[in-house]
Image (spheres, rainbow, N blue to C red):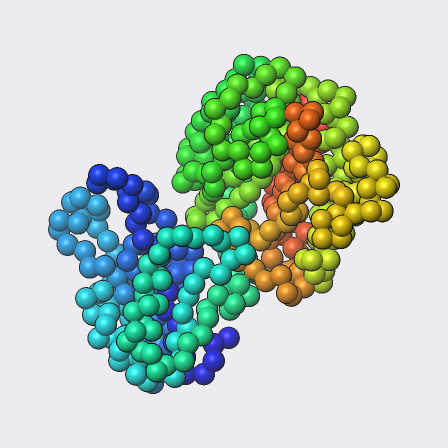
Length: 409
């Protein structure tokens, strides 16, 4: 997909400091991980498919290990280990980066620079890739520059079968976590205790933990879409909204369920839950090869409008007089229904092409009624297949009957 005689460069994430000598656990940048498998700080990947020398068509630069690093941090990749992981034959130490990069760059016409071009990204921190881009622009300012992100969104948006295997494993572990916490649900349990049960199940199954900061929101907390405090008591008669997924092999799972603290839905809870489930199931059926995501979200909005009218939460007059930019249903369902899923929870993918086989999306409609202390969202992870879909998280209890029967045991 790159233009002729072009290079592309990708860097690891920084290790982020906290205070004193502390730092956050290292999390590799998903682009260099996707393209090389290198899961180590300070790594650099350079691709130059039209390089005259075969050895310089794909090059990996790594931090050179030594005895001191091995004792304090653990040994870093050797060159042979890097080849085993990445399949890249040409591996240099970082100390040789400027020399080798210059040898490559002087023979290239343009350089693809990477940035974080995601619709949801709001970043105030200067990233390692930003510093690299600035260095390249300063030293190679007569080159043409291109953007890697549009190509990555196209390539990463559709998963290979190997990627789907790992995502199925992440979903399997997530399913075990949900079934575990259902056994612990009872009046008086704390949200953080339920979070701990998820973590136990994830770690014991060789997940590194949560794919994102978990949401465990009882009662009216569920009406805060990104509630992450998880420090409240779960009361008899309330629902608890769980938005929790495991990471496995760097791939993510993203699931939401709502369970009654005492094991039984009230009549009103069941009524609203059934409405959300109806939209959820309808949305999954809509999400098939060929549909455009903008059209899909519009159709899901129409499904939600029907359910909210039945519930009496909106009126025919509200719909007739609605602002097309913010339809009447948005009062109770204000977020989107689906996003791409993969190495990132809100993964890469284009919204300007039709949905196709191999794409993976969440489906997560919800209804939020703060005045009733009731917030319900249902979310599954859906792989688009040739003829429809595969639900990766279908084994997690979801219908009213399944949930009540499981909890009664």
